[in-house]
Image 1 (tube, rainbow, N blue to C red):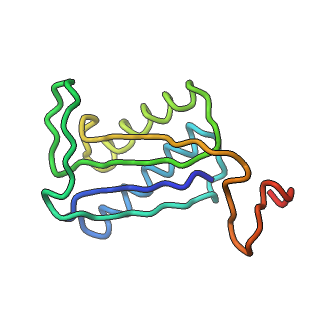
Image 2: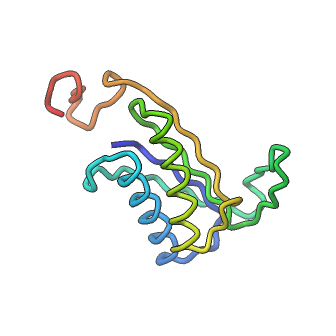
Length: 129
């Protein structure tokens, strides 16, 4: 159920973009124990130079292969989040050759009243989900 927003620099082909989306989804399903059919992803491509992501003093050299992932989700444990970060870095590196230093992840939490999956209804509040 998390809504996942992904930002990348333009240049990957359709197959490569799908591999990024699939890798992120698979890592999320494993780490957050969500059903595989809960897939809400928005991918935005940016022109080179449109993403500025400095290293925050960690010594990371970022490249145009950068992937920024934003999860909007119900509350998750710190252990689940740490597992998610680890799995994302590993899966994106193995499947998409994204180096772990080119991955930035953030999680924004919200509650049941903050979701509507259609039909003008708050399905978590009505008991439909």
